[in-house]
Amino acid sequence: MQAKGFTLIELLTTVAVLAILVTLAVPSFRTMLMNNRLQATRTDLMSAFTFAKSEAVKRGIPVYVTALGPAAGNEFAGGWQVWVDSNANGSQEAGEPTIRQHEAYPPATTVAATPAVTAVGFNGRGFLIGPQVTLNICDGRSGVRGGQITLTSAGTIYLREDYLC
Image 1 (cartoon, rainbow, N blue to C red):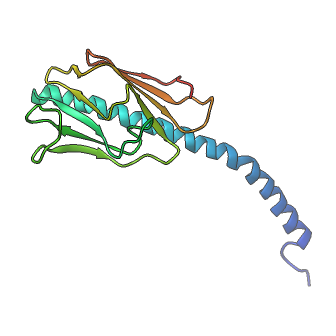
Image 2: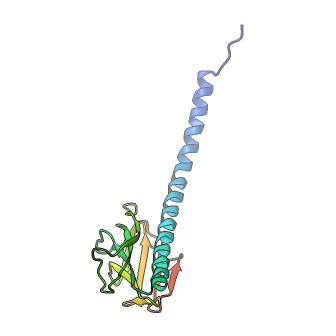
Image 3: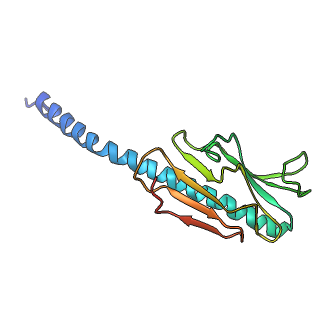
């Protein structure tokens, strides 16, 4: 009678080859995940600013994107909300609706604003309220392509994907 199955040596050889392949694949998979997180952060923030600007024009009143849990040098990574400034005073009060909100980004992600602002608003004509703002989006790795969003006084929103962290 002939035995069926694998010998111990065949099994150990297969496990060793599998371990080598996994060791080679995991670092590149981790890098891919981190790059995808950066891209998602860029996309989320671009979407928020574009949405706020379009809502301000549609409603004819200011709409703001405000940081939730801001920290110095990492103003918007703690999450953000888009809200309507019904009385045009620049601060959210009871009765002024939040129309979109996003939770905090992963801990390694930084979204630093220059100048260091925690709220960006658009008036009813789509112009930026206040000076030009630039947001640098990075994840703690140096030499990787993060992102840079620039909001001009004219209300133009630029995304630079080749920004090196």
